Amino acid sequence: MDPPATYISSSQLRKHNTRHDAWISIHGKIYDVSSWLHRHPGGALPLLTVAGTDATDAFLAFHPPSAAASLLPSFSTGLLLSDYAVSAASSDYRKLHSKLSELNLFERKGHTTLILLSLILTLLPLCVCGVVFSDSTCVHLLSGALIGFLWIQSGWIGHDSGHYNVMLNRRFNRVAQILSGNVLAGISIAWWKWNHNAHHIACNSLDFDPDLQHLPFFVVSSKFFNSLTSQFYDRKLNFDSLARFLVSYQHWTYYPVMCFARVNLFAQSFFLLLSNRKVESRGIELLGLLAFWVWYPLLVSFLPNWWERVLFVVASFSVTGIQHVQFCLNHFSSKVYLGPPSGGDWFEKQTNGTLDVSCSAWMDWFHGGLQFQVEHHLFPRLPRCHLRKIAPLVKDLCKKHNLPYNCVSFWKANVLTIQTLRNAALQARDGSGPAPKNLVWEAVNTHG
Image 1: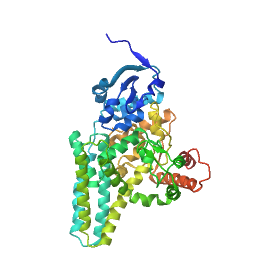
Image 2 (image 1 turned 90 degrees about the horizontal axis):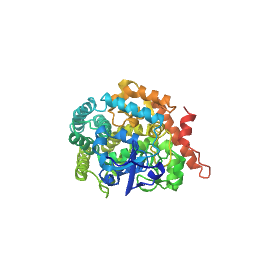
Image 3 (image 1 turned 30 degrees about the horizontal axis):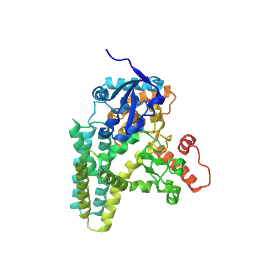
Image 4 (image 1 turned 45 degrees about the vertical axis):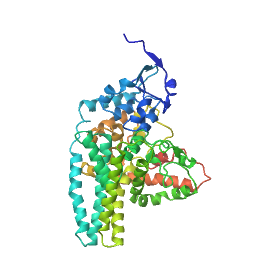
């Protein structure tokens, strides 16, 4: 006979939110995940972010049903949450999640990855031949641009494979990640997962979401003027005189910086792999990066002179800069907040912090699934070939609960982003002026 259940309140649960004492609630049951932090495949930070709160919706979004059955029982404390409640929005979200699971959509991955891999294997040799066997400057420049296009495609594979198995099993998925990310693009998949998981779990939190922390170059809110402490990087984001100067012109420098944003990803990859943080298969990750830094400079060295080499690098970096812009469009002009997510408003936080980009179905290849950012953030394990199908369901759910379902054209998304950056830039120039309550939200609502 089971012992009688013991209850604790949400206020008591909130006290268990440290690295050595991390408790979470899932469906009203309390679990102690302290010992799991260093083994969690998604990293310790996502768990620490939701520690001390109800993490039911986040758990459902990121884990297959098998995880609940195989992992959770070993972390059970036997305690129940006395004031456990489910909002109407969360209840409907869970029903929709169950419906998608019953339709087996999370397991039906389509052929997107096979098509992208085939495209890469076809076009990469053409790039090499264009450099090695042609004397035409135009062909060399086109080859460089094509390399940038292939980096974008590898980015889509890395993004998808970080959320779900794009291959037959985890081992093949890992191989695809290393080849497409580390070897082809020079970006560590370990860094990508570490960064991206933190972004998803605390979408548009100024101090928890690394995708909004770009000082000294960019800020999306005047709250950064107070030198916030990044919970992701575990350091203060200093808003000093240099940052003020750069931010003051950020709406002009945004696109030029995006052309070379890849340099930052190269650096971040090495910073992580050479740090003391636990990294899965660190040696393989480093070998993958080493392979990139052999083949790419070697290819560039075949060009006949230095100015063509510079043009080649600029072309490849600039083309892939389109993808960096796309990553920013979905969040820079959306609502932001301070602190960790509260746990009980997963659906609300994800819809408030994301922006969809409207486009025709034939342009889906260009956006790589990012055009359905609201849907992707609510169901990150859902293969992108299904995102268009579920978009009407998500839109109806948002309408039912009076939540934003922001969807604009690609052009308008760029306009909103620049307006947001410009508003913050003007505030940075006026150092003595009062900080607005929420520049990003004001920009979105003022300009549509």
